[in-house]
Image (cartoon, rainbow, N blue to C red; front, top):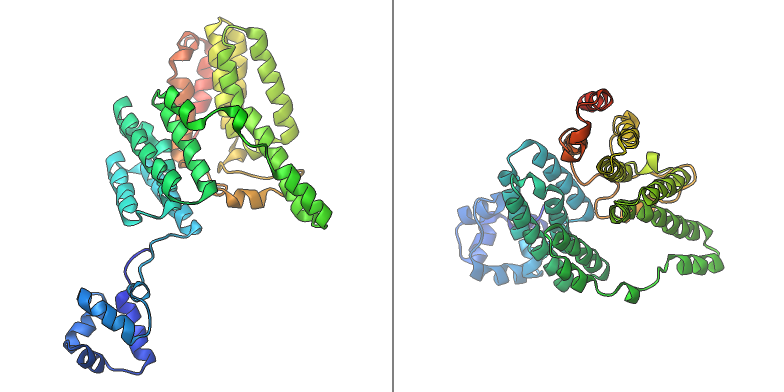
Length: 369
């Protein structure tokens, strides 16, 4: 995966021509053991011999080297999954060092650099301090800027821009995030509905269904994902908070998000419970925490991944286009630990921790493995 394969190439080409190692060595003016070492990977030909070898085998120097500067989409997904799991079990700096090695090795593999940036943003908090986490996010932002400006891939560049804006926000650089994202009024309208109409006119109803399902589904998910931030803006307005929860429940039930994307409820319920607790609405906060614990302890949601539903039965192809496919951005071990700590160790709930009902919830969370 991404290394120089010149020895195997030379051996294959030599055998195609029915040459012995000695005959090839004689042509090149080197010893037979030298050719043998090349083919076994013990050494490489001198750089001045590369164009001679390329010309002899009627190929390019790049093909001769057999160097793969890019990783496939599937290789990147597998690598992300491997490194994500290692973040959960090995020292943070050890895994970070390996990530940096991949960045050096695949300096211009833009999809890989984006994936490493995503790893950084999802695991920065494991660095041990806020300063360490901030340093990792700065590192991610620098990589993302390269992807955005140098990749030449419009879709990837947009994703890199969005993730870089997140890094700015996570490090308190709000003004830079605003400058980066620009004026929301200038953003283009979504094209999926128009494109679906075009496919309908063309007679390709299957593609039209995929596009419309994707548009409707992602629109609903986007509303749910944005709701915790809206609730924070209404921290002093209980009626607004209730309305946010009601709207979320309606959309979530309609889109079957408890089954397909339950993780969107995690931040929603934690935010709502913390806000009601701050308002002194203890029973309301505990009711919401009951809902939270009910979801996170439901074994049916694991492993956490994106799923379709009986109605949204045409969105699997959309999941396949995502950088990580349908898998979660962190290992399940880390996710479950955070789900427990978000309640048990959350200072927002300090005023509830002496209550029997809260203790019972904490005990249920403690059994989550």
